Length: 490
Image 1 (cartoon, rainbow, N blue to C red):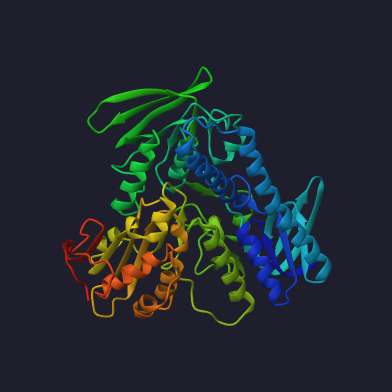
Image 2 (cartoon, rainbow, N blue to C red; image 1 turned 120 degrees about the vertical axis):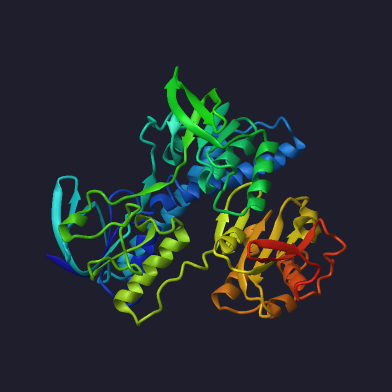
């Protein structure tokens, strides 16, 4: 039986990153993937949806000048397929050359893995079955779209994100069930195209309920400006396929009901960890309350078996999964390191406009009773946004309510928002104040100048004064659930 230092089960972003990190320690690694290297990070997930979003943004810009512009559907999915092909080819070429350069360290098997005991894994490929062993095991089997128990998903008429590739044209109408990030992203994509009437079912009073209301308001207004209809406060009573289209019935809080017919439906109600048929029960690996693999800083209850990525249901983001896997490998083979922190995760929401976030939100702080200061700067005051003619959005920075003004969180909503948060993320990570970043010479014109101006507002030395542009620059202090506007926070 072949023996390894580490067996990695799952070749998505997390498993791939973990295997590569183990090689850095000179360890003998076997990576097992039953289907396709890259997982949802490449197929039917992040890369696919973000390529669609980028394409839809271009279409939306064109339609501002040419309102009757029609999307070439074949060109659209050709672009998506090219992106997927490029990424998967890059990863597979890397693996192949790595096997040649490190023939004693890196090994790859395509097949289905089954954990037999804490050191033994069985690999099944076609009719061939073999067993291998390892000192340590990393489980990184990812997740799949969650399906509602009372909705028949055929991945053609009623689809999840996995079924988007089955579309043969842009539908004339589509309902999206789920008003979280992914649901709003797909609502944005299809409404941007200008051909699909989009309906979004929002059980809560507003979309993106985990984010601050001002963010949800901007995104809602822009979706509705593209013709989308948001069913606020609506519960889905039923959804079914009737005459090859979708019929769904809603019930509102006032008791009224509504029946609507659309061409397609997209179910976006979260993801489910891939924990079945792995042999977890053979070694007694515990699951958490969300159905993912329980872990303590990536280590399962079986001391030599670790886990990372979506299968933990901790935070379903590629950057988080990769970081977890790399951390797990360091815990296995490297020096003692401090536990992972999930308090400083940078995220991008591909909406209209783009939303970038790091740290805590206002509503998080209010819920926890933490006093804080807030500054908001409208995109309309930023020279780069004005030059791009993309002035919808704002910057918001939240700091501690003391003279140190340590950054607690930041939100950027608007064009190139994702480019604006990293410096602030670093300040949060290193627990630093704001003065050095405020005094740097930022490039001009740039979106990140908005961050600098927010910090200057905190220090009472901004160029535009908040008491002049009261509608575009805002400062306020929040204590005991009450927010009070102020002209100066310094």
